[in-house]
Length: 537
Image 1 (cartoon, rainbow, N blue to C red):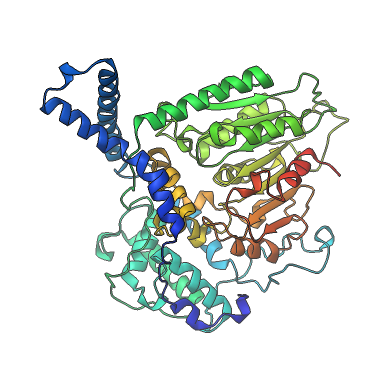
Image 2 (cartoon, rainbow, N blue to C red):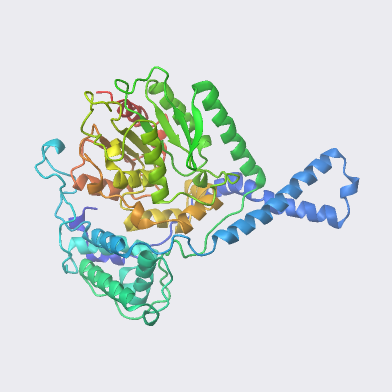
C-alpha cells in the first residue's frame, strides 16, 4: 500500500497471529522433534540403566549406547550452564549518548522528505542532487491523518508487538526508549538522572510530533515492548551429536578448500578467514579482490557450495571469506560466545585488507584505479554480504568507506532495521509455517545466535542509511537483491526505502523469493550476482 493511501486506522489494526499451516507440523514432527528429543531420551536411558543397575549387563553395543547417552547428559548440563551464563546482563553497556541522539534524530527524519516511492524519472547518474532525501528535514508536528504520521505509527508499533497504536502508553514508550538509548531497564522516571530525563522527554516529544498525536499518560501492562538485550534469552537445547556434526562438517570443508582450491585458512588478530589468491593474479592488472561476509546458520557447511561456485565463476579473483563462529554453531570455537563488536570487526577487516595490499583505510579507491601510481594494486575491494553479513558490511562502509569500491547486498538486514521487523520476525513472532519453524529452531534459538542477537545486538551501529553508501545509485558499484516473501525482513519496505532515494538500476526484487533464495541455483538472481561480481559489462 502506498504511503499516500494509508488511512489513520492502519496503525490501529489488531494484529492477529496467523493460523499454523500443515508445513509447521510436518517440520515439527520430521525435523525438530527427532533432534530435540535426543537430550531427554538420553537422560531417560541413563537414569533407567543406572536405577535398575543394567549397566553391568550390557554388551559392547549397549555400552556404546550408554556412553553416547551419558555424553549427551553431561553436555546438556554444560549447555544449560552456558544458557544461564548468556542470560545475564548484556556486556554492551551504554552507548555514546551524543551518537545515539543523532541516530534517533535520523530515525525520526526518515520518511519525512517528499520522495517518490518508485524513485526518479531521471537516470541515477545524471541527477543533480548528490544525495536525494538526505536527513535535512526538521521534525515538525504532523497532522494525525498525515500519511507520513500514519506510516510512522504503523511501523513503530512493531517494537510493541504490533499492538494498536492507541494501546501504547507513556510508561511503555519510556521503557522502550530507555532500553534503546541506555541499554538498561527503565525503573521509573524518579529513578533516572536529570540528564536521562531530559533525553527521554526530548525524544518522546519528537516522537509525538512525528506520530501526529500525543501518547497517553500512565501505563498499559498489557503492552510489552521489545527489549532485545534485556528480555529473557530464548534458547532451545540441541544435542552434542548436532554440534559434533557441524564441527566435523566445517573441519572437512576447511580441508577441502585448502586441498582442492589451494585456499588458505588463517587467523588475523582473532578473525579466522578463508583466503584464495590465484597464483596468476597481478595486483596492478588483475581483477578486483572480493570479500564475502556470510550470514547466520552453519558457516561453511551452509555457504561452501556458493563459495566454490565463486571460485569457479571468478577464477582470477582473490576471494576473502571471514568466518564468524558465533553465528555458525561452532560451539567448540574459542570465540563462540564472544562475537566481535563494531570496533574490533572493522579494525580486523581493515587491517587484513590493508595487509593483503588490497586497499588502505585512508586511500581513495572507489573512483580511482590508480594505474599510474606506485600503489596501483590498492584499488579497494568488492564487498559482498548476505543477510546478517550486511551488519559487518555496514560497519565497514561507515568506518572505512574508501576501502570498499563496490558493494553487493543480498537479503540485507541492515536497512530499515530501526523499524523493528527484523527483530520481531526473527526473535518474537510466533511460528506459523514450516519455514519459520526451521529458522526459529535451527538458527534463532541456537545458543551462539541467541547470545549474539539477544545480548550483543547494537541496533544503532548496525543500521545502514542510504547516505552511508558511496555511489548508491550507480549500479556498476552498488547492487541490492531482495525477495518479496522474505520472512525475516520486510523486503517491500526496504525496496521502497531504496527506490525512494533514487536507487533503480541497481535494485533487484523477486516478489516470489524467500530469504536466502538468491544464493540458490534455481534463483533468477543466481547467475546475475556472479556476473556482477565478475564486473562483466
